[in-house]
Image 1 (cartoon, rainbow, N blue to C red):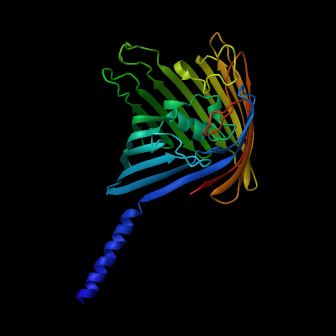
Image 2 (cartoon, rainbow, N blue to C red; image 1 turned 60 degrees about the vertical axis):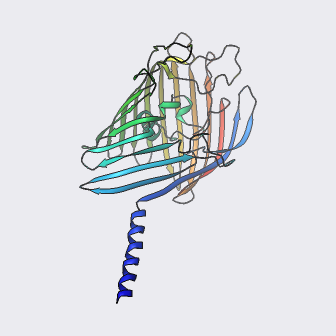
Image 3 (cartoon, rainbow, N blue to C red; image 1 turned 180 degrees about the vertical axis):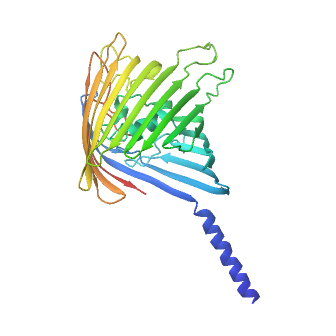
Length: 361
């Protein structure tokens, strides 16, 4: 009887351990394909690239029920490259996301760490039919570099949904000695979902001040500000997308590649611009046709405008695996220097072609 009791206790212990471990999920994306880029000063290039549609990644997501509708949560996510097996950001293991926090069904979610900016969430999840990936990525013309995508040292609070409405706020500390404002980022997004409609209005503010370092004095510089309205609506036979963004100030609309076209006078990042996008997803059998048109209207005296059109097709081979093809072309005006990239790369020319496969787990 004692032996039986001991066996039951041991079995129960293993069951409890298994149950405790079940709240941690390992997930990821494996995405790779062939990319062809033309039109850049460095010449045409054909390559095998990782993360064309979605950056290849592996992540760990965990939750623990604390009772009364409250849970402890965490996410650790690392990006890697399928083409050579390297980590996609040297010196940072969990470069994509790394945060911990608390989530309440009635009070919302509060998290601390490296997290997505609400500006990028709205652009990639609501505005862009390409989901910020493939040759047609909205990142080619809409400003998403650096803290406009992910922000370190960030505090993020997201409210529960009320009749389809929710609010997401981010505040990131610059953590520069002697100046609590230098380098800080503030972003707030107002979201609405109802039936086939998804909409977001986001305001993002980036402080560009610097602190004194060695013989270099501190400098107060203009903030970079972005205001984005993103909308999509699913009519079932077609899903339509639209976005408009206002960029103003230093670093509000940077050029992803310094001088990809070898101009005698390098392109100048706009300090005031309007960005617009319209696009569609059309279901076709086991896949969907994707198309978009974008316009960058540089409102400075340089008038370095750019337009991009893109088309693609994604075919579901299973619930987790898809094959894709995409093409995009940018028309730069007055020495503008925007390039056709994809989710993982900024690109090297004014045209881009992708052919690849994407698997999620």
